[in-house]
Image (cartoon, rainbow, N blue to C red; front, side, top):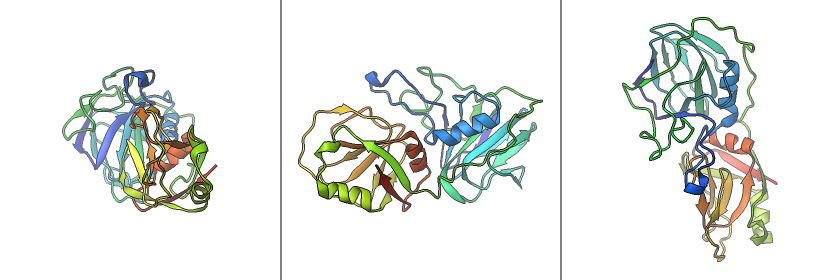
Length: 278
């Protein structure tokens, strides 16, 4: 078992996500930065969809009660084992009684901690990803225990990985959305020529951007949305749906971000700047 001593700001269990239930209004959920999550599992020879911890902004303190191996990817949060600093993107052995903790956020916004063979928490609708009210919890709590299989011997095929510098990149690759044709020349010029700042309203459901573009008076029927759908409100605000975003919406869906762009954006925080590339 892993015992949670402190939770950090917002730490959840995530896997690849919860599929085939969007017609019931259930979002996909899963790791916000799917690239970093897959790298963590790859380092441990896990399946890509094995459950891991997604750690946002500040990290937890975790006490391991059985041996295993871990890998930490994504944001650099000054991770340490028993007070000794350890690097991201590398396999680390864990012994009974070891404590993993995190310090200052150096770059990025979300970090991923995987254990060999994944966490064995309860599956709900074919996924271990937290999303209340589908799951009982929306984040881990202090003193709770997270099950995993003890592992005493393991030889990783990959010792370390050189990560993509998501925290440095600003260009978000997009394709035209279903209502892209509604955009006028002034919209297009601003969308693809200026930088936008991440607003304080950013979470697993959606990211809002500070800068606005001209609004519109279009009325639409509520239509399907996806993680990475960029919506334009009537007032001219840009809202980007993320992994826990609603499955339908009534704002024009002007752009659709790539999976890599969604992962990039999930490593951005309030005040960081991004731009769109068609």
